[in-house]
Image (tube, rainbow, N blue to C red; front, top):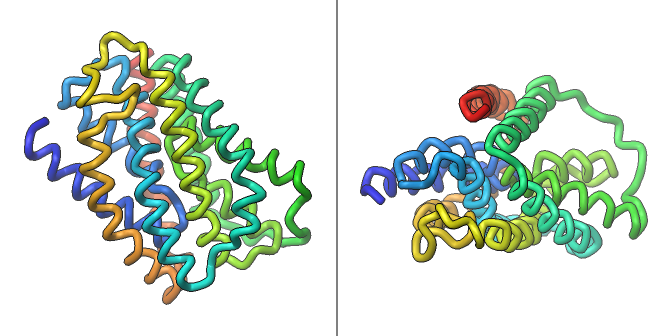
Length: 271
């Protein structure tokens, strides 16, 4: 892999790590489109670029979430009982989502990603305060919510924050604790999704193979991004506890519209 690609991936890791800590997201919705672009220059077959980008994005969340959750936990913002209740469903959903993606063509994977990111950007840009009128559901409800969060997150290579944070706040969890708890949920999402993408891409004969790829995971890209994100995630978490992040969300939503449009273009080109 050329040196400029490595530096670009490291810069990308800085940005996604900061966003993970700041907004309680895994950064996957930002990371995947850029990885799709950069991996085009890394000898990955065209028909697998989007799959590899999503899988690698999921793998980086293993590192980002650990760094981010440590910063949030030190401020008492992680509800560990909630994490334990949702995690079993998330593990199931993460593996399921990765397997589904492995069976889909590039067109459908890119289209689903573009649709989800566009929807998330719209919700963020035109955010309306939802009246939190209920508490957290029982065991079955938490497992069901976790399964949905894990499946969708694995499909788009994200840490689940765009689903888990609204879910938790709707259930009367304070925003800062919702963000902190979401960052902790990123690890089981990433763990299940990463294992799933290794399994689903294991038998693909056109991928370069180890030490470049492990299943659909691109190892050099994974570590280039992850190393930098570990350092910047705590900075984002610190900022999140000292400012109102709402004004930043509209700026971030505008970026997501651009990235969704790019992935829609990739889908059209793959059709």
